[in-house]
Structure formats: structure tokens, C-alpha cells
Amino acid sequence: MIQKPLSELIEPGEGFTTEFKRAGTTSLGREIRAFANATGGVIPIGVTDGGDVVGVKDHNELKSVAQSVARSADPPIAIEVESLGDVLKVTIPAQHGKPYSFKGKFFMREGASSQQMSRDEIRAFLFSEGLIHFDETPCSP
Image 1 (cartoon, helix red, strand yellow):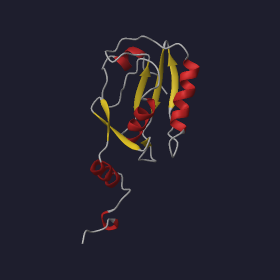
Image 2 (cartoon, helix red, strand yellow):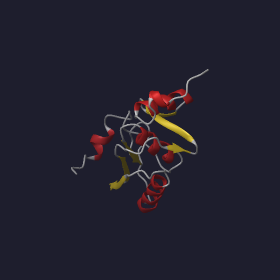
Image 3 (cartoon, rainbow, N blue to C red):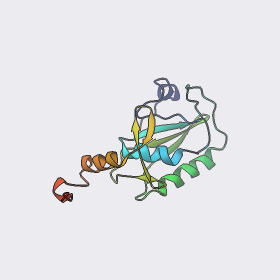
């Protein structure tokens, strides 16, 4: 795979397929699942919301946490984790085991943020993914 330089990854800013994380992993589970429920995405850890590189110190520990978070999904989410200088890049390719939940909630990317799906949005998502068919839904009396 040809690697994009860090500047090319950061320059466009956050968006539908990119979420900057300054440090830590507080919302990493939610973000990984939101990207997995969408078309995939990239999470550079060590970059502020404004696109400034602040870096992270313990790449090995963060890699381990990211991989553990992805493996804890059912089914597990395939991710790629690599160091780009001081930044840790977590790539979530498009997934086929949708939908993925985090702590009993489903998340989806909307613009540059991850949003919790409502009941109707979950239903529409399942229909759009071909996981529920119209002829299988119960009718109201």
C-alpha cells in the first residue's frame, strides 16, 4: 500500500472519513465503530481538532489499545495501525459485518462527527445494508 504523507492526511481537516484525536483513547471505540458502520476512515492520534500535530508518546501501548478495541467488536473489526512520525494512524477499512455497536449504542458518521443513531436510523440502516427485508417486517394490526 502506498503511504500518504502525514501532511496530506491532515491538510483537508476532519471530515466524513477523518477524525483527529489529540491523545488518549476515550472515544476510540465509538469512532472505530462509526467508521466501520460507514465506508471506513482514518483516525490520526496525536493531532488536535485544528490540525496541529502534538504527537503521542507510547505508540506501542496505543496500538495495543486500538487493536483491542477493534477486536472487542462482534464480529471483530479489521483495522491497520501504524506510526507516522509522532502520530499514530488508525485506518478502518470498509467492513462487511455491519452493524457494529459500542456499549449497546450504534454510531454513524455524519459530516465530521460520529453521532448516535436513533431507533428509526438503525432500522433504515439495516434496510439499506440488506439485513432486513420488507417482506420480513411485521405489519401493524
